[in-house]
Image (cartoon, rainbow, N blue to C red; front, side, top):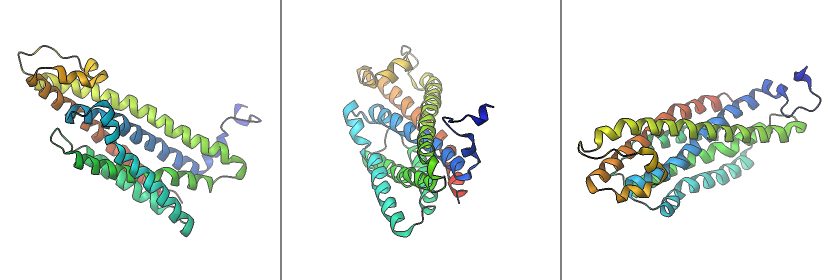
Length: 243
């Protein structure tokens, strides 16, 4: 009888709505990729390029600028044309391409290059994020507008939580693989957990060890972006199936 509660928090009948299910899945992946980028891009900039904690936050402004710019632009264009499906389809392609570009970064990547890569990812996220809400709100009954919108936001937050946990595990695993192979044979053991918690400590290491640790971190972080690509590609097929 739990399926027929008088006032359920989340009515299960909503899952029979194709748009609700597809936008929920796409929202989960969106949060998955977005939070992964927001967490690991500053870490990459601090470790691989020597940016301070404050500057690394400023250096991801191209990502934010892309999201805000395309959210506003797509909203205005959808208001003018009344059509929305084009934008999340194209946005998922940009999102996948942006992650692919980020996965090709290394310690020699310039600030301009990394900014352009972040901008591509941000443009893709901006094309998808708000349009999913528009599609969802047009597909459910008026009485379900609030619960459908909040559930999509919940799926996005849930995706971010899963993404942070999975990507963190990938980063730890890759560091455990690269550090022993890149550190000089006579160097003392380096604790990855200590350096991840305080990237500034890397600059206190001896020059030879510091370069090896920076290279290991750079390779490990771009592995995170590489693993995110299949999930972003899956979002393309989800939004393509939206009516």
